Amino acid sequence: MRNLFVLCLILLISITFSKTVVGAATLSQSIGFQDQLLHFSDIKVINDDPKVPLEEIAAFLDIPFGLEKGIIYIRKNGIEISYDEASNITTKGGIPEAGTPLVKVEGALYISVKFIAGEIGYKVEDFEKQRTLRIYNDSWAHMTYVEFENYLNQVLNKKQPTNGKSKATIYLTFDDGPNKFTALNNAILNRYNAQATFFFLGNNMKKNASIINSVVKDGHYIGTHSMTHDKEKVYLSAKSFINEINDGVKLVKEMTGKDAKLVRTPYGSKPHITTAMKSELIKNGYKLWDWDVDSNDWKYTDKEADQIVKNVKTGVEKAYKSGDRDIIILLHDRSQTTKALPKIIEWLQKEGYTLKTYEPEHHIVQNFLHETSL
Image 1 (tube, helix red, strand yellow):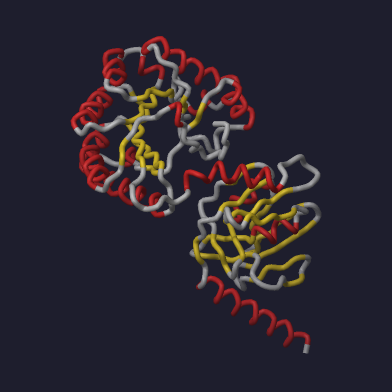
Image 2 (cartoon, rainbow, N blue to C red):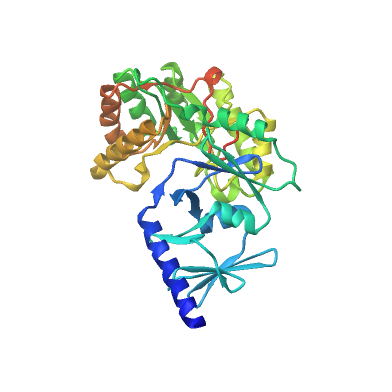
């Protein structure tokens, strides 16, 4: 009788799982932790329950987990949760859990945010208007509900839809110059009366003064991309990090006479920038830009330039449909990008987008850290 009961329970959970996965939907929702937003590659709502990739939330919440003989174990604060990949059953202390707190969708394992938060001793707040769940612990200092709601409104404001009468503002940004392709890209921008933002490497600036002068003369903004772009050196410590940024900013000032408070860090801000590094940026009054659309131009050859154009179109359309009205596109000063640039600009202008350079007096918050001070 007991075996029949267990068999029925397993069958019931398996049926629920199969129905759940079929109904899985990607959600344009945010997950907060204490006083910040977390950045997940994907969030899915399954039976009205937001789920995120286990590997990613485990890293954020410092949750140890591992695979042993087809069973995934999660251990934290004396709690052991297991997930059997063969049967799709989640158990806690050897007892099957109701519902599907862990599920596999397209080969990736997702876990319920509410479930894991509750199991390891956290509380969850729902900000319905902002479509955000916040995980928090009362033993740590954190914003009140109202304070965090105001923070969400500020961070998510650039994602609010407009009345549909006008298109978005596009910020074309170019990394890794100045070099000969910077000059070519600048000439193309001039041809189309388009503005852009350049993030220059200090070591490249020293030998390309004439190119820099042309970029400044034509009204584009120059920010720093560090001195070396050497990941091991830039992110070695908070001190080495801020030295790379400070030296790059100082060089922009010396060569152009302009203050460059906008920074793009090598390889993007996350996961490289530590709390100490972020504090240095804020202390020095810098602003930080990552991007909304990654062209992935570095992956392609000149002959594959059309793929770069396609990536930009797809990324911009997705960002616009999500309600983003200040879209930042990541490009590089490279040969294949120069080949793709005319088609990119022509398409953007045909679609009714406005191309601008960075305006310090109208700073747009866009960093993967979700830090409004930057």
